[in-house]
Image 1 (tube, rainbow, N blue to C red):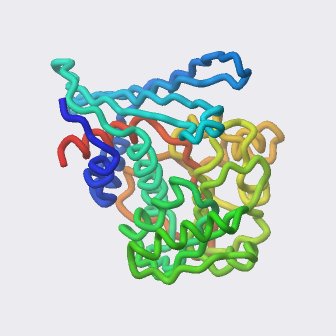
Image 2: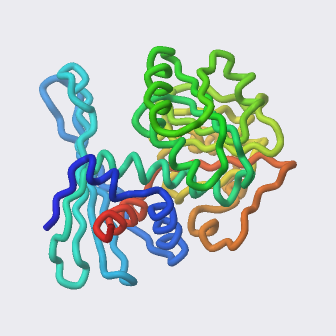
Length: 310
């Protein structure tokens, strides 16, 4: 069995190949069980969580499971709150083939999924990307989107300007983008072709009244029923797509508007299972599109297969 370090995992997951594999598996109809959530009580009162995300498919004979430990108290220890590993196995023999760094795998497959959604919905000639957030996934977004779009300008906004500055400095060493920090978020939204939000916001930071026709909104951050990155106006003005049905139950961005009636189930135009079967980009310069992803085990499996076959 091969063991992939963090750096080896990043190197083994080039975005063009990873995006293509995710699209291939969803187009083939590969599905997966709902993720397993297990609470691990502790004496400090901040319960830890064990997450298990399995998936398998017959076409290529691979299966895998991601194991993630979420430990909130690690922030006091100077350690990451999430530690994850991905185990890839042969579906036919059960042989364990690879143990892959789950944190890097998750960050890159998340960015790849966002870019994949935009491939079908955003302006193919998009040149300006606005990133909300400055965390681990935000660092991956410029490279992921640049693999599909002729990006020239990257705008960065974060509640903590110092973290936004750190991200800008990291990105400056990678490629020749025109990078800029954002203080006036409303003005930056108007100037952007693609807006990708990867925050941990509990209340909307992106308002629908700011959006203009032809834009594409990509939502990454909200992964619990109480987290929200956009308001109801954004959802009502946009053509809404999701990665899988799990987004309707796990993200406050969709769950809360569905509960209030501001968003109806029939307003959801499709998921990856629909988008990845399309032959052409669906961009409409008169419309606003919105893609909400919460992550899925099929995306993890696609990344595991790509890394192993690299």
